[in-house]
Amino acid sequence: MTSQTDTVRMTDAALDYLREHQDQHLAQLDAFLSIPSVSADPERVADVRRTAEWIVDELSRLGIERATLHETSHHPIVTGEWLKAGDGAPTVLVYCHYDVQPADPLEEWIRPPFEPRHENDRVYARGAGDDKGQLFMHLKAVEAWMKTAGRLPVNLRFFFEGDEEVGSEPIEQFISDHAELLQADVCVVSDGDTFDDEGTPAIGHGLRGIAYWEVKVHGPRQDVHSGQYGGGVDNPANVLVRMLASLTDADGRFTVPGFYDDVRELTDDERAAYASLPFDERAWADETGVAQPMQGEAGYTLRERLSARPTFDVNGLWGGYSGEGSKTIIPAWAAAKISTRLVPDQDHRKIERQVVDHLKAIAPPTVRVEVKVIHGGAPALTPLDHPGVAAAARALEAGFGTAPLFQRSGGSVPVVAALDAHLGIKTLMVGFANPTGNFHAPNEWMSLRNIRDGMASLVHLWAELGAMGADELRG
Ligand SMILES: [Zn+2]
Image (cartoon, rainbow, N blue to C red; front, side):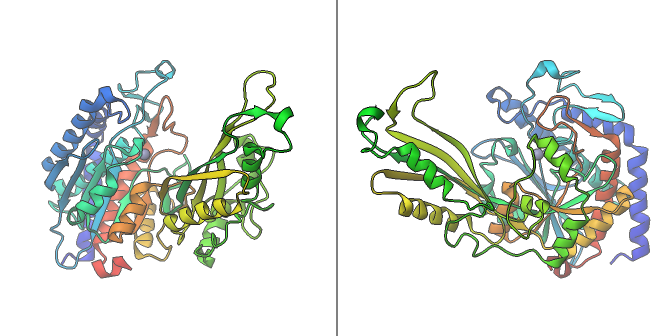
């Protein structure tokens, strides 16, 4: 058992190590970012693999055990572990992804995307923020502990994926096949950003799920003349828009029966956390180009509606004639892509069925309706009173010098929902990219400050979590 003063002394030694080796680490980061691990590009398959191998070598060099490259249906997954923190010490799973977005349009990059450029206290390169830079920071925080204390204060397992930017297809299977390599008391995902570019860190503790359908309404055998048949043949496009319009009421609430049954209400703490987030509605509307935010569900603020409430959207709508001029037809069919964003504790499979049944039930007998489920994903939420949240908050405050803000995200991250569903592991999203850092765009960057303060936060985080018992952390 390590005493508290020992932990403080060891943490300081690890932080000193990071300061002393900063130049060396940045040069190594450049080497890592130079490998073009573009998962979407079939010509980069060997580069993606080379990046995975680079990580395996690095984990092994740091003394991480069973560092392994796993073949999958697509790009490799890398795992490794260090489990010598002692009896009752918690185990933390670390997730990042090592693949990157394609770099085009290439001509908009000031320097080529895989030749890192250092300027304005920033590192510019594809993957600098999303997500290779953050993965690298995890490696260096581990190195700092291993090279100074010769050990980690907590058990760590690593889970690094190469398909995040193309939909994470292999992970669900991998998680269910390899529970023994991933089992942990909590997961830390670093694939997000800080709250702002002025050094305010953030902890993400919730994500929305999704359900997605394609609806097709069939009418006459083929397009028919609207002058000859109009008034007698029901128009599939008219029917489709009528059906879709009936799915929301004036407040934007979804009308499918049972849809809200499992929605978990916000707690007072959560509402207070939302209220404490700086948010300028006018600036938000300007940024999107809309005249004003929509009315939305009564009783919820805009910020709450954007991440803690479910939504419904028509994502695409087509059918009939859309060429130049006019063509007087009743189209043979019309179709739409529709989706809902889901929140805890909605079950995407149940919602998928409800919507299929509802659409069939409201279709008039004059048409035939086909509904296909395209894909779905579960929502995830780590309660604000989860003991890991407080530990992460202390670590981020120690690293950045500013207390973090807590946020739920409106989007979905497949790995977070899959870890919860298969292994019951809750996730803390602790991200270090800069919010304006051009991820998925030309001239992606991360600030040296976020790299430095983020690595320091991780050094603190392992000490904070290591000071808790596994039972305590599981909450
Ligand atoms: Zn990412």
